[in-house]
Length: 174
Image (cartoon, rainbow, N blue to C red; front, side, top):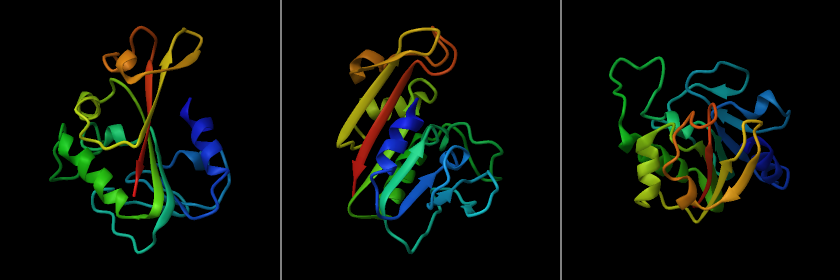
């Protein structure tokens, strides 16, 4: 669902792009930097987003259905890593903001209910989105409608339909 939305934003972008989680390269060939802790590949930086140190600044940073795994269900675990650490998500977002150019944007997409700590961070407004777009799955055959956060905030992942039933597309600025 979120891939065509993010792709439409990327196609308008002229400056450097950073992707967190190697998703787009499986669908599109274009020049961008990729950080993915686990997936190996050409031009993929294998590093935890918390520890990421880059000299480069970006006009656009995107993360497609990846942020919900940070501190939640990462596999395999580093030897000193703990799971269910909601603070790690906030640390990751703050670290990513450091790599934005002035007026740069960070787009995060994630399914509602996959990480209850992330959902709570959104509910409590601890993640400072400048825009929040929400989608709700309305049919078994994968039809979606745009809706409000209040309509999806309590959805369960995998119910009533398999996998995601609510999707958040959040925008954070530099």
